[in-house]
Amino acid sequence: MKRNYTAEEMVATFAGKAIVKPANGYMLVMTSDAVSEAEMNAVCSKAVYMEICIIIRNSNFRSLKCPHLRELRSCRPGVPAIKIVGNPLFTDVQIPKTMVYRIGTKVLEIRANPLLNISSIKALNTLCPECVIRRQP
Image 1 (cartoon, rainbow, N blue to C red):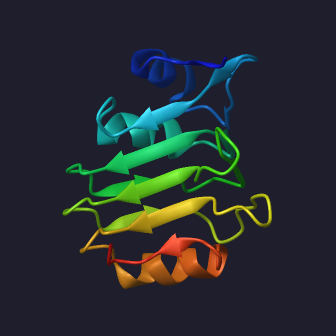
Image 2 (image 1 turned 90 degrees about the vertical axis):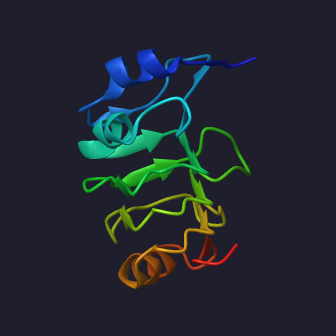
Image 3 (image 1 turned 30 degrees about the vertical axis):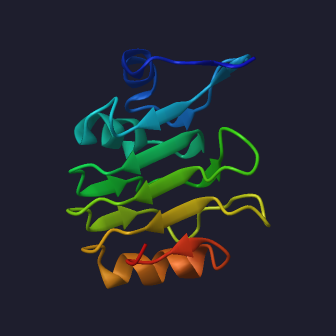
């Protein structure tokens, strides 16, 4: 059984780090109800490799910024690494076009965010054509 980091442990351990990867026997799950938008973006800010599940659901978050991310892996097989659903103020996702992920995995699920900007949608659909990325539910 894998253990989760607490929100405080996760932010303290990984904010500003290039490699965001759990210790053996641990799993990283970061949710919008446990950390602030600033804390979540601090964890993503310098990351080049992430093995994590990020869930932003029914929140007042406005953006997720991972400008240096080169490789993204989910915390669990079959689960999106980044899931952003039902956020009325959410406008922007910043992930480089060059990011890699395991082919055949739906690493992103981004839907029901009515203010999500078109350029984010287009860039993410190009990055991950098999992923669910749209404004509608």
